[in-house]
Amino acid sequence: MRLPDIWTGLGFAVLGIFVVLHAQGFPEPAGAASPRLFPRIIGGAFVLFGLMIAGRSLAARLQGGDVRLVPQMEDWMRSPKRLARIVFIPLAIVLYGLLAPLLGSLPVSVVLVFVSALLWDERPLAAALVAVGVCLAVTLFFIEVMRVPLPTGPFPGALF
Image (tube, rainbow, N blue to C red; front, side):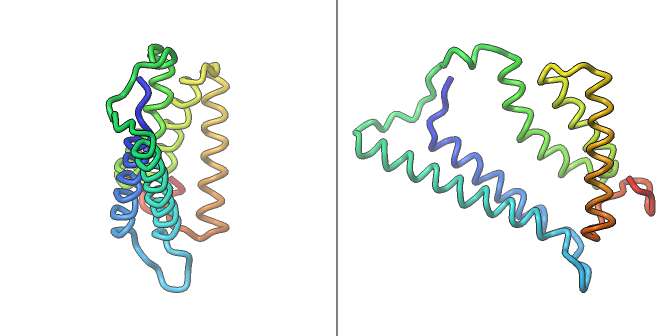
């Protein structure tokens, strides 16, 4: 099933709006880069580019006389693994936003990167090592270099 670009663009725009609204609840410390900054930039880009894709698709359909908005089945969409890979990315973004404040940024991101690696047929041991290493490096970069306080979950004051 190939979704028309209008639906894909609108989906990204809605996801961007969700990210921007969710980021409003993040703390805004004085004199430091706010944890709101990156989610707002990314969410705003999702909204902007999603609306551009949807508008371009709608204009092309109206010019060509094809206003069909119903998805058509594509061969690659028949593979459950390929569908899982596509669905996982926006799902991971939403799950991180919902679970990181509860469980901590590092454990949530490690699990999400590990699952993503498994979906792309990585061996479990290699996936686990890469997930821990990359997520630890990114977390340390945000905390120590960027001075962005990531969610710690039930362990206040801890790295994760």
